[in-house]
Length: 240
Length: 267
Image 1 (tube, each protein chain N blue to C red):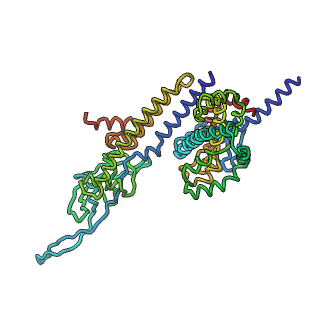
Image 2 (spheres, each protein chain N blue to C red):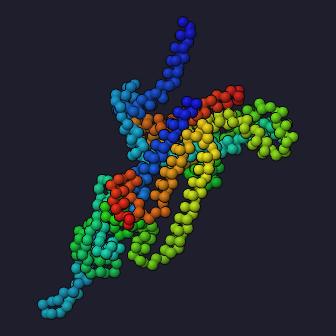
Image 3 (cartoon, chains in turn red, blue):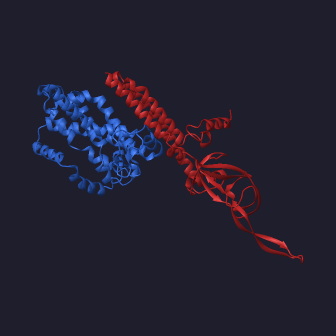
């Protein structure tokens, strides 16, 4: 009996530790970061008009810093500050100038060569840690929604997402009921000690699942799983 | 005097058997006690205490944890499915009467006696043609039908009282009902013993993972530790200790059943 009890304790402790280490692993945490696409502020050629000494207006060219229109959030541009701990967002107020097709002139606020965000797969805010990726479908979809652009297949994609969300939620609820019933059925007698660890592990798994996937909007969720400062900042952002 | 000498020899043998495990555990907590280039212990006892190996393995290398859960998945699914398949097969071999039963059983035993390397290639070809290579099924499917557990269960079932079967046959003609309600409850200790054997066998598998799987994300921890690619020696030692723990837990749970099961199977 003592051996079984020891085995129960070792089992619960060992697998809880392994599960926690897995769920709170750095690499896994990186997967939960907002994916962003970046572009450097570059010098672009814009048409210009100059008045000559003879009073005639001549067409000429000028090279000025410019960014994609996608990078602008009102008069804010999110620049990326890349550190050893990862890439973080810095809010920059910019003064814009002339627009040309999909680029816009920057008169001040960011320097040439600065990496700025042109799209993200969820809402982003200053100070947030992000994962720099290529321009992909998820980034494109969210950016298009943010910009109010009409994108082919966007509505269908959203419907699919909603359907998936409902499917996942129903799946989680059903699986939770099954786990509870199995615990009640099998965790009796010598195995009764297992009931609490199993249910705790299940709750952690479900929380992680909800955290990692779909149910909550990205901006409601703290940036790190265990980051008390982050929690505090995020709590302050909540409407209540 | 003879008694003391005998006990001393036995103790020495036990220590010799335990030495690799003791050294692994000791040096996994040690500092600079392993010559990393030659993978050789520089001293019997580590000079200091350090958890660097564990930290690097569990915090820095996420893929180790992923491979650990792969091992858990493979070992658990193979063991459970293997028992589900073996119990009816063993029931048929021990209780049913049909032509060629002995011959079929002989082939089964032959298959069991063959070394793993003999069946690796045919399995590989089969899996390749079924487009199952590099999927978890490549590991699970061939292992589910491994004959070892079926053989053990058959031997045990042959020892069951025939009068119970005859009495059960008077009650019902359903073979499944007899098997589930009469045979399986009697097989409890034997099934637990088989569970331990099969779990341990597939927890430790190396070759199958190496041959059937190319994707690192699908490999079990045993495969990773056997190669040790990308890991330092202290990480491999720490990984070995972590790798041992589930087997120790399993033994602590089922050692009673294991002893009774082996005894009843006359092994």
